[in-house]
Length: 159
Image 1 (cartoon, rainbow, N blue to C red):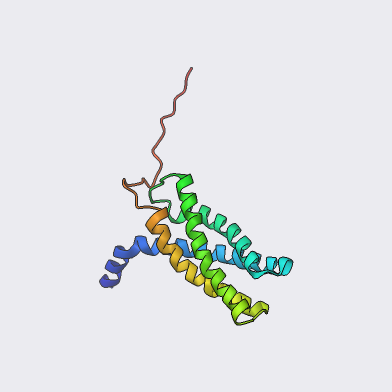
Image 2 (image 1 turned 45 degrees about the horizontal axis):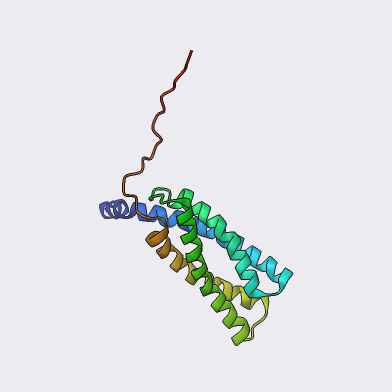
């Protein structure tokens, strides 16, 4: 039992971070998949549908990751983080577009099931890249410890 406790203590922060990242990712995945399918019905273009769905779900994911998953990390500026986040999401989107494009235009599989399987594979590859790249370039390690509680504010009352 001591081994498990020591192991948990050693990796607890990583475990908590991965859990939060996974929950935000799962919610973004549901949003992305739902929008992707809705846009497929509306536009019938799988690549356009994927770009639109990813843009919306990535905006949701940024907010969740910035203010929950990686809130304990350095806050190096909203503009910088937002730009890098979407640049890296654009690279991750390429994984999805390549898999979807290969499925539709090379394998000539045009049915909704095949396009969704291709979307799932692309999202999986993109997720691996995103987790690594967010930690590396977007949500940096804090240079000073970030307090877990807000400091008590002194209450001033002017009479």
